[in-house]
Length: 204
Length: 336
Image (cartoon, rainbow over all chains, first blue to last red; front, side, top):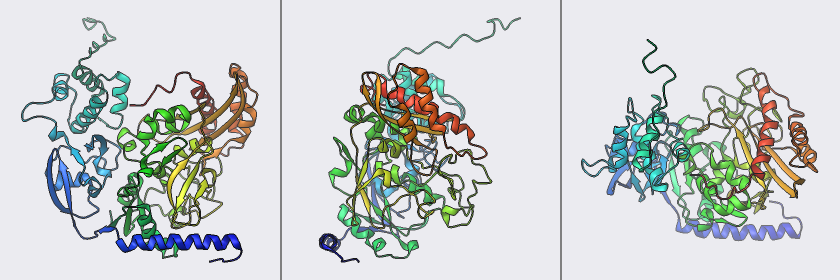
């Protein structure tokens, strides 16, 4: 360490104070988790459960593998597709890119927690009514994303719907029907299908 | 992901203490790694690019200042979604809120932090693929030179040709931003000096923080007439092809002064002083003069085989960022 000059000396004293502060903090000591498995409390859909997992376990792996809730899907596993979307403290997140330890003692909601018994939510009913799915693999993530959207914007504009689900990919391309389902579920008029560009009688 | 342990820091002092081995020059491979939102780090770990044996968790830090947005300053752990939705920020420095409003996806913005945006690693597909032993990973080759370089630098490239991935950094440059630091000898660093090009420092990294230093806050000068424009291939979960951040000082409808910084065109945020000079005195109503000034943005570019299109896009992005800055009644628009 350089000790030349007055300002450097002052810096050194400041550095010493900082080191002393750090030493005190160190004495109390933060908790260190892992690398061996650790106990983690997860509260999913109102149910608090304790699981024992590696710190490297993602929230998605914990929810699917440890808790057996397989609604959220592992698709891209890089936070790019939204298939694993869940709500953490009401915020839409991709569970594949969050460590389960970071969700401890937070409020986690998955698609399984939306319906009450057999009673689907208005949004889920609208998904069925508007045929807002094809293969269905992205659907749980989209339902969760749309649920988050409707909580923030009870009557979203089409633009807000598009932005709200812009983190969810549907390779079947069911977006238009999803927009309609959200509009319908929020009590807004659903646009009629545009007239096809060919003659109504098939041109015969 | 590799096995790791996690130090659950309750305070920044605890995080700094846990990071202290870095200051003492411990072997690079064994260094603990700070983690905030984890959006980038977990990605790097899943790809096998980063294998830290220890993470220092900043999400467990309790200091409220790290999560607060104040006038002229916001905490390092503020999320991109919080920045984008902050009504005061949209008034005082709209370019900052706008720069992150449509970055990545809603899910990512709910978790990704401000400091994480600044310090995320580059998105170069050779760097991100563990099979390419590129310069940035300690190898001897920048594969972008002979390879697929559509998304690489048109300014300041060489020997590595990444573009800096942060949307937030250029926005802060035009607002004379700085970062508040703890854990080292410095307490502040101008944003313009937070990054270095691959020719000006270790090609292994992009920032100039000393080992042990932690960003705890970000400061900016108000820029109420400021704007942002990103040109992207996809409008979601994509990094811009080019983007521009602009802060204007107006006298009536005349540009009295301008700050302009481009992104996704160079290994660092790329200020455009020649454009700033050319914009001075231009009337906003004079479309031809504006276009001439914005065209200066392309000067000095050295495109690679596949990215000459960026040279043509950049003046467009600057022009649209100016239009964004002077668009009326913008503060009311919070992003959903």
